[in-house]
Length: 395
Length: 128
Image 1 (spheres, chains in turn purple, red):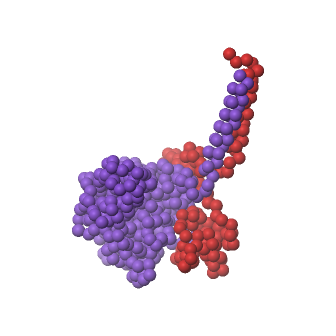
Image 2 (cartoon, chains in turn cyan, yellow):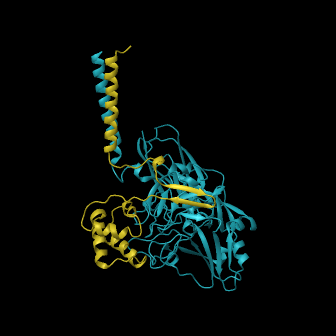
Image 3 (cartoon, chains in turn purple, red):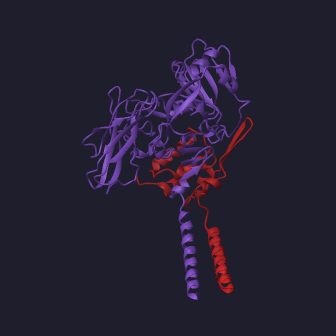
């Protein structure tokens, strides 16, 4: 009996030591996954890039769903004083500038007095996948998770602009949210669209995302939705729209989000282009979702390969996969189109026939016949469209 | 059936285990809090909605210029902007700090800017 008691005593002490050492394993800062995953208001576990202002990336496995849930939708703000409190009863959307009658619309009126419209569209940060550029580019080091596909409901921008009456000579429209810089001299976040784009009947002032209010971190109460264009134009916590009769020269249109003006958004690090333009249309791109990175697969066994391809609404003609570093390309099966401005899912069944690291690649071809190339770089790390490689270990 | 003395002995051992374990738990440094202990909140009261986001700054290595780096950069943004970056050459860090001054109008004089660049090169530099 005494022996048994001693045994249990030793067992308990060993167990205690084991438990303590386990809980001490998480101490390493910055390198542990737990420290990078952050739980934010109205959000699930997101990959945290920054918290002031918040920049949160969607974990890759969420992209196995065609529609990205609100609580996993990526977050990207520029200025630290983001909107954190609002009384929706006193909120107004202001439309002014070169209009016949400046108006202030309440949320209630916006929802009840103007016809509703909706679109399923991909929102993607201009800097999505920046961390994959070589050489590396400073700024937000996003993986592939600064994007999401959602159903947006609201009122056409055209409808609201026409309600205010556009004056002759109007050429641009600006959009400003309620976020502010920490110091007064920091340029406020204002974006602009040409008047023709603003009136094309596709740009939406959204008050709903996937059938719910837009999360605060995604731009509650209103978010501009610009289908086919990078999310830098999708201004969140939107409350001010101005019609202009001259060209808008604000910082966020003329200094920031500038990219070389060619189809591939490609320039050389050694001789960067002299002329740049604001980033605009979503570039053709394709990514892997499955197999998940670092997930080994079995030799000779069927392996399900899956991913997404997308562009600015031009549409995807085909997506091809290579399992031998780009020597041979096999056409994948495309899922039916979700909508013109959604991503398109592709699938491929692969039977690995080489033990060791296999270099998988994916490339998309758009409906104009343009195919992704392997070489692209630009100084801002914007509009990623080069061919992605996924290294898969076959055992 | 256990004898009374044996029962007391086992009970004491169990208590000792619990006390020892809770002590080691308290001693450990702060690690990322699990989601249900997170101070970040979202509240709706009638027509008013509000979020609260807790900020904490990551640790940075001790080196010359750390004080100026932390006190200056945190005026506008979290230092996580720097934690997430890979290593860059001197000219890239210099361009980044200059961008803050010329484009974002951060009030940083050239002496402080130089010290910040040197600190960044010390902790996240590469040879050119």
